[in-house]
Image 1 (cartoon, helix red, strand yellow):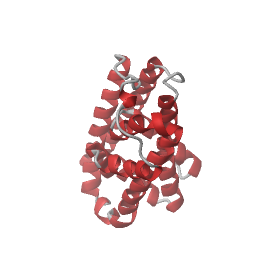
Image 2 (image 1 turned 90 degrees about the vertical axis):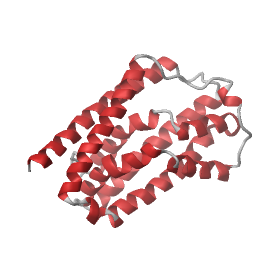
Image 3 (image 1 turned 30 degrees about the vertical axis):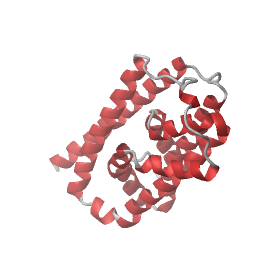
Amino acid sequence: MLPSNSFTAIFFFAFSMAIGAVLSPGPVTTALISQSPRLGWITGPLVSLGHALTELVMAGMIVFGLAPFLSQPTLQTAIALLGGVLLLWMGGGFALRGIKGRYSLPTEEEKQTTQPMSRTQVLSMGVLTTISNPFWYAWWITVAAVYLLDAKTMGMLPVIAFYLGHVSVDFLWNSLLSTIVSSGGKLFSNRVYNILMAVCGSYLLYLGVQFLMVGIQGIQG
């Protein structure tokens, strides 16, 4: 299901498919909003690093530990179907809310809650907000697992490319968001935010259809 065995192609494929999920508000976004006004743009990279380390552990478990279990044809079909449904649900929600203009950047009141944390605490918060999100587990054991196992059949470089492409979105968006929040929201508008979410949601819908087609082919044998 990956576009090719090219490191660059896989990197940008993983990057593009992760955009919708990363832009969606969640525990990590809440962490950024609470700390960026005091720590500044560095909040984004710190939270992203904690998030990326957690995802590295999960990716390693899938590639090296859970691969024999996940590579069973029946389970692969089930994962493809569940992943397709998940992507359709996520993408549909992102696109619909974006079209209706329901996403908004944090207000001044939202940015003035909580006391500032140390950089180590913020990094740890990136780990804690990741493992507290049930959708994170659902993503990795369904959608990401299929791509990682596909990448593994081509070698470790494609696996690394997929992982780096995926986490790069986190670093880019979270750094941008923390900069926006710490600057008073002057660098980005709610309209642009909603357009991005609508586009990214539409792309996830496309991927969801692709996953369901693979699942249906698995059922048909």
